[in-house]
Image (cartoon, rainbow over all chains, first blue to last red):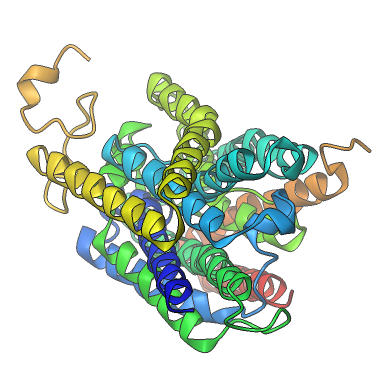
Length: 384
Length: 67
């Protein structure tokens, strides 16, 4: 019983940590364009986004069918599998953050859970068709849909306001951009915090702490909302930089069109039940805003790097998830999970220290793009 | 309908997001045109445009949260 409680506690802490990384990884989705265009000062932008994520987490309390049960057989989901899946997702989130690549937190989590399930229960426990239809196909369609909407939106915005005096135009779109970015933040809190709530509820049920049909306990909602908001406030500056400065040079009207497109696609996909990743949508919107403005240039090699990262998200997170499960299983019981947890903690700490060598923060997030995320010694990176 | 792509949901998402994303952005742009025209009719038109945008946002929030 006690050992079980320790195990459960570790799973909950890991889930909240994942939620936290989900927050800072995805701040960029809503706020990268507003920060890049100067519509909001960096610190104000992340604070606004954090508050809206927090509020968003409380808005819809119907926890979406938990991410894990849709793609693997429910019987295969043990506490250790949930834990290992979370470690896989966490690891992928941290590594992509380090390289400043916007990448889907849900995909990372799904990859981790699938990897852990594959090694613990075998291939038969993984619903292959579900993964293709709910994860892989949407991953291709999400950016394409967003590119289309943002391209059309940006084109219209520029054509319609061509004769509007620059001062009115910039002011107007500045407010418009803040508004649409706020909607994206709100939607993010609603959709993404629920994934963590779902995972924690699943863990509570799996351990017998609450009944099978019990709803999400209030403390789970409150802690998940807090974790994602804190993460958002911390600001994933490295990812913000890539999305805001790396893909294309964004002007205020483009930022407005991009965020409107993101908000619309996210709302529509959530309503019609077509699971699109927020990150894929927002990246597509930024690319579209580059295409839609005539002569604006999209740095396709940066976009290509992102696409490559998206392709390996599932297998990479899956590998870590499988490793984490195998490690925990080898040692066995709560001790095994505790050991893996400590190792993950140490590795994360190491990555954080590594990131301090070339930090990206509120002060240098908008520096001229020189080919790399953290190009503090700018001279050396000229070639790229 | 394909097993792997929910085409029905997909086209609805596309139409809705084009209308809401690009359409409302265009309406908002028109409000700026109206505002900068300096005429009363322009301002009235701008107010109307902003109302449409606000209605769209409320509708969007409503459908997302009503699930």
